[in-house]
Length: 313
Ligand code: TXA
Ligand code: MG
Image (cartoon, rainbow, N blue to C red; front, side, top):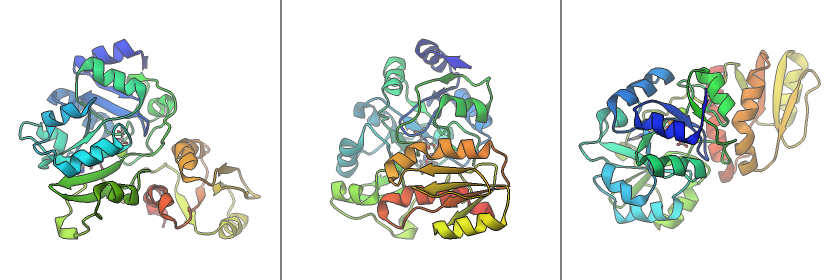
């Protein structure tokens, strides 16, 4: 069900759930200080209770409502990457509801850049918990119709157009003057290290759990097979009928439909989930996908595709 801005804000203030656009993917939003509202998010998404939620806020002044510590390093990163596709995991204030942080001692915060999201946040005055607006482990939505398709027409959706970034935010945990990368997004590790003035702490024992990082994730219903080379993909398709292909740049398979995405990580990311949604709708036996090159700017896309393909590898 589509709702307008005023309806969305009124619903959120009443403790109801509304899917909202952001520049990364659509989020299923609810008042992050309302336990009942948050329970609806977990129920609709069929999300495991041990997977915490990102709280979206309008301004840096609100960080102190949620985080017990906003260290100089965290402030530097916030200043460089907010508003944007960047989430900071910080030590939580004890009063942050357990259901938001799934019992962790930290809270994840993000200031999104999307103008309509900003308006919802500013006019409601709320911190909004919003995981991606899809069923747990399924493909994230980048349009309002993806949300309706994935969660059902009864879920209210605020339509803010197609998401410009197209994959989920980069997540960084900061404790004092140390930072760790919990999830890759289009803001890469090198850019963060440059702002931080130091590399990520990669000590495994020190790394906080990122409970949502299931190996099978971001996944269409149709199984996926990844190929490191175009010619391997094309060869495979000649002996396996009923496949649909996704290739980077040029190329096609003779036996089925081929989707081609631009050979640029940013424009490809913007279209990636929409293309996977379209491919999934064709009820093919298998989705054949050309893996991106081994260069750092493609790492976030590689991460999503390898998680999506896990069940067939
Ligand atoms: O771009 C995005 O981040 C989108 C939009 C809607 O903002 N949101 C999103 O939410 O991707 P979700 O719930 O699908 O993924 C959030 C990830 C999960 O893997 C979760 O485990 C992790 O963030 N997370 C949340 N709070 C955390 C915490 N306190 N500590 C560690 N990981 C946390
Ligand atoms: Mg998600």
